[in-house]
Image (cartoon, rainbow, N blue to C red):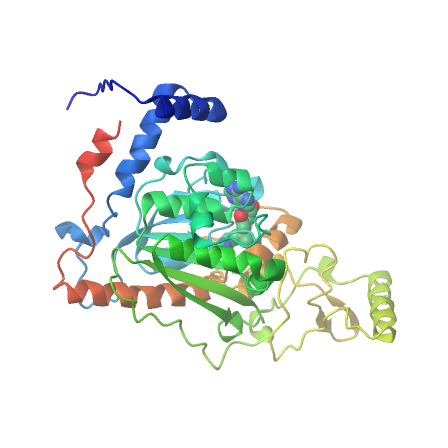
Length: 406
Ligand SMILES: C[S@@+](CC[C@H](N)C(=O)[O-])C[C@H]1O[C@@H](n2cnc3c(N)ncnc32)[C@H](O)[C@@H]1O
């Protein structure tokens, strides 16, 4: 087929729409039309899991399956660690914070692309799993119906809603990854009086995904009480019936805080007498008023409260008691362990300031929990693969489409 297309007799309403959209998106007509056609072309097929290819067909004994994934809102790559550990290859990553990018680059040798709202989905390679721990924001649209939420997804219209979830939804709509793996704070379901969750559910459902969601406490894997909602979705075009997916059960004998503490922490993490006095008085004042605000002196044989991205402020939510001294904050290295990141300073060094390191760990997903969820996803993928006699698991990608799209 020639790379030139001449289209005659374009109806006036379509001409009008093209003019309006090129003005709005400030694209050249050619650019806009190719982008639109590319989206339409990509919608008509589902990317294949790479184990269609004979070269990388997994051994039947190997619990891992080779697959590709993208890492959105990547932070410092908590999902990447979990996915790579299970055989995944990262084909695209986006994170706009330059300090997180610095850590990510050091750890994975790859600089993430920036603002996801500025990246057109057609720039993202095909992938099997879309992973994203997206920021939780309120949705501006009230009472969203399935139809409404989907109607707003075309192209980049989603961006005008100012909600990053719609960027994920648009990518899913255009790229059709067979699996979505999302993570968010526990209160996602109650956030904005339930509207946020209602919109997310309706959107994913409307896109044609089977949806599984569960709150998991990381305390079974790390000495930290950290409840997060995990959302796992399977494309109905691939998985014709609802898969028998099950979230992992939490181990009962998790590690204790004392197992992850440094033996000789720098004295700079010990609170000054002044700050310690202030925190005690502050807690006392709130206790008198009948509420529970205050510092959290951790139990060394138990688990800590949730590490937040604000820990750098005064660190009062998790304080480590010390004999004959004021308590101390956790060191960044201890936060790395508390979050279940690999404890390997050579391979995963901290390359940013303490403030940035606290923020990065406090924002992250716990890789050990994510890895368990990934293993549960792979059980479903493997059983589907075996059901199809180890043949082509998913609809095959059509390479000519990619060439023809330009
Ligand atoms: C909850 S954190 C995810 C952390 C990640 N799961 C990890 O393990 O480190 C959300 C991340 O999204 C990033 N982010 C927010 N808006 C973004 C945007 N428009 N484009 C790219 N990244 C963005 C933030 O900088 C933050 O690192």
